[in-house]
Amino acid sequence: MDTPAQPSPRIALVTGAGSGIGRACALALLADGWTVWLAGRRMAALQDTVTQAAHRHGAAAAARAHPWPADVGQPDEVERLFAAIRSTHGRLDLLFNNAGIFTPAATPDATTLDDWQRSVQTNLHGAFYCLRAAFALMRTQSPRGGRIINNGSISAHAPRPGSIAYTATKHAITGLTKAAALDGRAFDIAVGQIDIGNVASDMTAAMAQGVLQADGSVRPEARMDMDAVVQTFMTMARLPLEANVLFATVMATKMPFVGRG
Image (cartoon, rainbow, N blue to C red; front, side):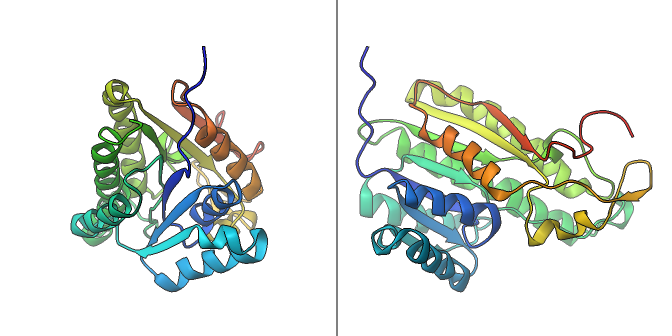
């Protein structure tokens, strides 16, 4: 049985593409020949991603990058983003639902309502708004279908102390992934989730010095190189639509996730 030919060019959207995991995965897609829309709140950060694409992969890769400033927590901004993708290409083959925020660590009673609402607005509502718009495009385009990868977290399985808002939203992403994967079957839309633990970045620098543990101690934690995340993501992204990685966990081997203590 022949595998259906992939559309050319392949069109991807990466949210939170101005830094960290989003930037690294967007650069990998550009290097792999994809046309990539880069969404994020700050245009300067998105332009820096384009600059890095040019430096690492050449002018042709950078020319396939489309920076688009947008707050995914605002449905009207998501609608404008997807309208631009539809009018430019008429299709979307991959959505990486990556945008997310951390709020200050606090016990439930000390978590401000503003921090709670900001977490839910970006981490959950934003992911749903983008997934919803991607569904609407992918189910009607020709050839039909596409792939959606949601960025979960180790927190989608187990919390850290003082992380109720972030943990609740990441548990919700798991439900979003399962329901969308089921609903996507009829339209050749594959939906999966990548759960990442302790990738080395500016955001996790404190982990190397010491981070609060469940037993109340403060201990350093192992971290892994960003390339491990990128390789896992690209394996998921390149699959034919008849195959899907529903959940993938990529983590620093020695981080204290499996086991007690």
